[in-house]
Amino acid sequence: MRLVTVAAAQMGPIQKADGRGQTVERMIALMDQAKAAGADFIVYPELALTTFFPRHYMEDQAEVDTWFEADMPNAATAPLFARAREHAMAMSFGYAELTADGRHFNTSIHVDASGEIVSKYRKVHLPGHSEFDPERTHQHLEKRYFEPGDLGFPVYRTLNGLFGMCICNDRRWPETYRVMGLQGVEMITLGYNTPSVNSQKAAEGAEDRLFHNRLVLQSGAYQNSTWVVAVAKAGNEDGHPLIAGSLIVDPDGKVVAEAKSEDDEVIVHGCDLDACTFGKETIFDFARHRRTEHYARICEQTGIVEPPETRQQD
Ligand code: CDV
Image (cartoon, rainbow, N blue to C red; front, side):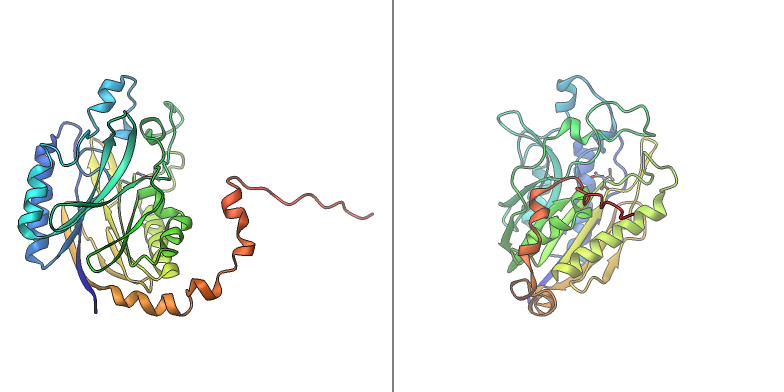
């Protein structure tokens, strides 16, 4: 048995006016709860340090950059790193990363129990749009503020197993899980900020969005025989509702823990990484069963290419 006791640290809303220090205090309180529940690894949401700022249209780059972190750890997050070291707890959280050469990414890091950043992931599938869109009920400007991640989907060794990360919209794409599945991943962690209503389809509300959340996480876990830990930032941020529903899914695709609130809440589960082995050696033994000669389109094509029309015989 290779046990990782993981805590999904769902966060309630962070308002635009809330400072990083205030938010980090909440993250530390969640970490203390996770420790008391026996966790050795805590996972926080996407862009955990601030409100979900891509809903706000900004033209001034200096203003945009106030939402980004130029260093990690930095003065605001140092207390979180310190508490994690005190608890000997590994952690993962998302933040907006501004690199030394001025590039902007939607990033997650995995920090080990000694405080060392063991892996970094930069969001690949950026949803939304880059210009103000008056047709939408709310803006989603990730394509304006971030560039697509340039690190791929790395899988790395830590906590006696094989780990990987993705971020929010990435979870809707089977390629995300499969690229990590092909590296033997045993636990995928991710954070999300998912608006409760589709900005282009009012009829798609929280119930549908929670359904899609479960659907993609459970299928990604099952089809790659991996644990998946998905953590929401939830609730009402300055009038904009986000779904909750943080989940821990086992390698059989079954939900083993689920958040009940739309607020700060910790759910904890003891995950045996050895539970991934059965699926990886049987129905999803990729080496025996994948037929790559039929998969070329997946890498060669983005949009749909329909088959040619066939001429009707008279
Ligand atoms: N932060 C996100 O990536 N949100 C998307 C929304 C826009 C659909 C998501 O996939 O939840």
